[in-house]
Length: 494
Ligand SMILES: *[C@@H]1O[C@H](CO)[C@@H](O)[C@H](O)[C@H]1NC(C)=O
Ligand SMILES: *[C@@H]1O[C@H](CO)[C@@H](O)[C@H](O)[C@H]1NC(C)=O
Ligand SMILES: *[C@@H]1O[C@H](CO)[C@@H](O)[C@H](O)[C@H]1NC(C)=O
Ligand SMILES: *[C@@H]1O[C@H](CO)[C@@H](O)[C@H](O)[C@H]1NC(C)=O
Ligand SMILES: *[C@@H]1O[C@H](CO)[C@@H](O)[C@H](O)[C@H]1NC(C)=O
Ligand SMILES: *[C@@H]1O[C@H](CO)[C@@H](O)[C@H](O)[C@H]1NC(C)=O
Ligand SMILES: *[C@@H]1O[C@H](CO)[C@@H](O)[C@H](O)[C@H]1NC(C)=O
Ligand SMILES: *[C@@H]1O[C@H](CO)[C@@H](O)[C@H](O)[C@H]1NC(C)=O
Ligand SMILES: *[C@@H]1O[C@H](CO)[C@@H](O)[C@H](O)[C@H]1NC(C)=O
Ligand SMILES: *[C@@H]1O[C@H](CO)[C@@H](O)[C@H](O)[C@H]1NC(C)=O
Image (cartoon, rainbow, N blue to C red):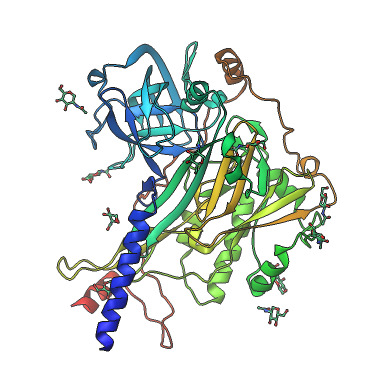
């Protein structure tokens, strides 16, 4: 009887999971370590391809040649509607480059039925270096940032799909990313949803009370005031007290002015094409030292290679993390002395990269590997998708703000605030003053292009690199710690 009930429970759980994965209409998905991809139809007859949704670049760029590791690409010859200008264009990302040709064709997204098919510029990638990942499930990028950081060539800029869409529907469009992370402890595939809104859909928008201004319309540049850990010892009550609108005890005396200046010294961007939260070296060290100590206090022994060198850590079963949340304070649109806080739980930044349950048939070893979703990034601050999972993030392009709210799916991330400081954060943290709208014309774009370095935002790639197999000493319930090696595990199996 008990067994039946147990089986029934398991069955229900599986059904629930299936429901969750297949019925909640996700349109974004990706493998561990890769960003979120969307299906696109290009040309007539439509060719179905996958593109990464990337707020860190502007151009729709598609592989147009067979690569060593993939023969899925856009076949120029098969589209009757392609116009290829033959003009060379190129783009450089923090990791990888590509070059190709400026072309135009019809673009449609089958999972966005309210969005009409439009003819749009696109870049046909004919050569690339360290851009496509081995065996990646995507063949290109859908850049959603502003024209000044589009791919370009001599006297040409590749226009952005969003601009073509706006011209076609004759109203400004906004988009929302609802990234949910993984849906099951034994499968590292992540899911999410991209939704497009026009300003008539403002009713849905009203609940975005936490908004941050886009300081410059190139990348999605925002004001990040601090990146810190929440104090776990009083976290429960802290969260209660933070719910209100009262002035936080975390004020200018505790906002480290040097840190907030350092965070924005070059720029801080919101980039769905990057995995990690990247921050200046000194701040990274401070945050990770605290995390490491916190792990030690709770008897979790994790090697320094994991914390400081981006190595993976593996265990024979899925892990729950008892680590403090990361708090990211960002400038509010309401006033220049007001900010709000994104609370990113450990589940976000202790990222699953392999989830393999042992199958008796194949005799493989169970393996659950994690990588730290925080990186030291020189002068730039990048809020990659690690900072978005469990939240809904609305990019209101025309009005120039990004809204954040808690999501119904994914990790238990939160948004709290608003909090006031006594002085202007724009001034104290030397945030760039808001610039007027960038004139959306190629001339203006070219002018801007000359003025800025085109080293575009960090796209994608959180290399799954040589995933060092490390089985750590792990506290076992009630018993002594044992050291696990791969050999020991195999023995246990047999
Ligand atoms: C392109 O056309 C060729 C020949 O017409 C056909 O064999 C091939 O399957 C087509 N490829 C795609 C991706 O449609
Ligand atoms: C690329 O993937 C293939 C098949 O999955 C594999 O055989 C090959 O070793 C991989 N190459 C690199 C450089 O990782
Ligand atoms: C994870 O789940 C998806 C969808 O349910 C499936 O397509 C994929 O093969 C799974 N991955 C692994 C490694 O089991
Ligand atoms: C506005 O929202 C509704 C409900 O979500 C949706 O059906 C409709 O397509 C949206 N309109 C536009 C133009 O996106
Ligand atoms: C964008 O912001 C403007 C001004 O705040 C607002 O009127 C408009 O409805 C917003 N659009 C969307 C889709 O949220
Ligand atoms: C956390 O809170 C405790 C008790 O309130 C305090 O002693 C400690 O200094 C705090 N730690 C940090 C990093 O703020
Ligand atoms: C939170 O506050 C309540 C009363 O205000 C107290 O009873 C409780 O012990 C506190 N919890 C923690 C974790 O400090
Ligand atoms: C915070 O600042 C805003 C704008 O300056 C002001 O309207 C609001 O009343 C302040 N709130 C508190 C709690 O001080
Ligand atoms: C919070 O805001 C409400 C109204 O919005 C106000 O009545 C209340 O005094 C505020 N609380 C604090 C602590 O400022
Ligand atoms: C792994 O599989 C075994 C049986 O195949 C099952 O008992 C166990 O619960 C699974 N582990 C997880 C984390 O799902």
